[in-house]
Length: 139
Image 1 (cartoon, rainbow, N blue to C red):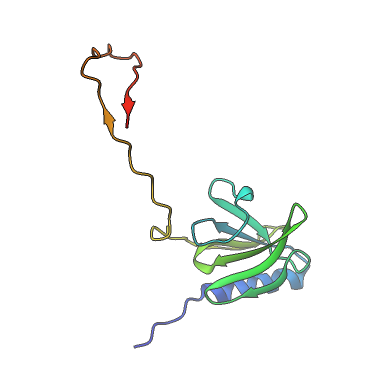
Image 2 (tube, rainbow, N blue to C red):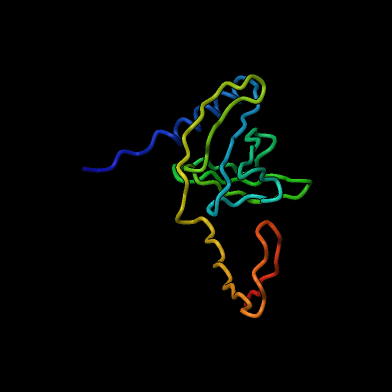
């Protein structure tokens, strides 16, 4: 049996079109992860809100897997690529009407934490009293 396509990309396209038809500004809330290509300096607490209005985007393509377009940030044009799975909401800036989506964390593409450094205690150094800082040699 064939897998049924997600309704999410269709809803995103429909709500954006509704916003534009009503004269509203469509905003897209995105969870920035390792798969999103966007200006990281504008990401706040792992999220970014993007203007998807016709005046703010160039070559907008809202596909079933990715949303791609070019936009200006501080006057510099940048290419953006956003996986549909990373979109948490689309709504009209003027009245907040739109739709929110649950975003599952993407562990596969998340950056791996650096390994813990090996800590070696100096046997010649006496133990520090509790509550007091002490230096530890890290190799």
